[in-house]
Image (tube, rainbow, N blue to C red; front, side, top):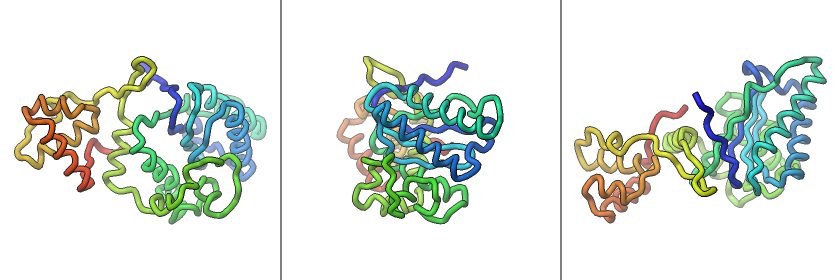
Length: 261
């Protein structure tokens, strides 16, 4: 199976990597600090911003904003330098990482704050803490506890009132948004990122029995990347009707799609 194309486009990226066989990559406080130092050096060298981070025992999450098409260089610097440090310290040989890093390009700003919540709430999901800011090696901990970390300069975590948003639990609709985000396929088109649709338009509108089901399916189709004009033409509706259906769905918070992975 071919690999998912790597999107290097400048912008926001959610980056994840795990230890090989899900083994631990951080064993003590020094390990966490060395990783942050390596990340800081990479930030200065490759000119990107770190908006959110969470270093778990066997994996890490980063939400970074690149200024150039150099994501692979950034990840290679971080992963190789840390692997060299860890292997030397533990007197081990062989790969530290499970494989090449994973990244998701944030093609729509509506996913940004959902990603912030997902990353910062990772320790809560793992039942390691009960609320944002309690886990030592998350960016929210540094910000909320007043521990200055140059690495986070410019992070959106310093925006006013953001923690009132991040502290609330992920809703069902936000989890579904993450599913859309993580499962979306895209391609380069004239150096721009274009989403590829997950389902045919016929599949979106199978077995529609009433207007409510039709409107929900319209919401799914829009989330899947179909234009309102495409949906209107397929259903034989006016574009105004389709637009009103989408507005009603958004006002009720009914963004739906496939299960969350």
